[in-house]
Length: 317
Image (cartoon, rainbow, N blue to C red; front, top):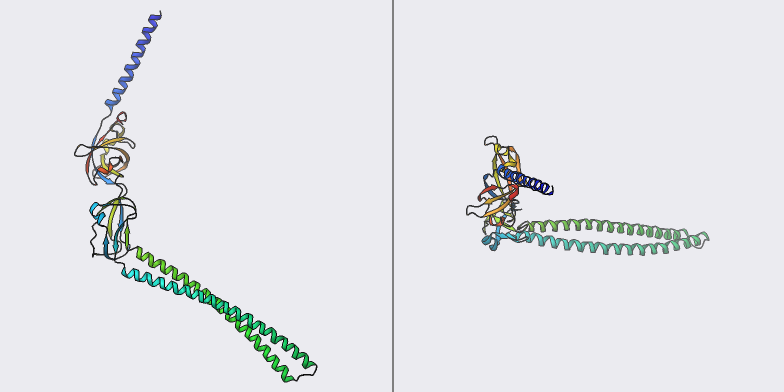
């Protein structure tokens, strides 16, 4: 009885094994790899333009020879003589404005001192007038003496008013000098920006394209100086017939599926579908697809290089 059960169990296991094996073979036979033609391009290609017009005075000879650059490297400099002169003029103007602010501070101090002095003088004249008034009331001085004392009091009042007006003018003048100082600082910043715009620096490490500046050539604002891209961030652009995409999973053309990107010399670089378009070209009935290349082998690929793409099934990824 036990032998019979063991025999049946072995038969059942063999049936399961062959069933699983046949499923794998069927799935492998069901997959149909396709071969596509593609072109290599840079993912993040950045254009470097001249921020202002001028004539080229300096060029990075290292970048000209190697076509490589690093972040912050000066690639091109335009003639900066006028910009440097304008910057120095703005700096001198700013120093003059700062001196004007100091003069205004000194004028305010002088005016405050004058106000204090004339107020003390007014207090003295006022006391003298009160004494003269008392003497006049007692009949010890005549009316002319009282009028003279009153006149001195009025003159002292006017002196206090004039000194306070001068103090207000000094404060107002300082406010205007401070405004002029702020304008001078902004002018200096503007001249510094003008000077910086004469220099083209690399925004990041990368490879330069169309970098052919010549010393002495004059350029216009907005014209292209070069293009820069990161060498390990490349993709392949390819086109797939709509009729093939009807069975996209069967041929492995699905976002996230791996492919082999094959160069003309047979070298293989692994890639992965990052985009499969949803709009077909009206005439060719092709759909655009993008494959991101492995960063390890992407630097070896040339831009605009023609490659062949071989789709892979899931069990080969």
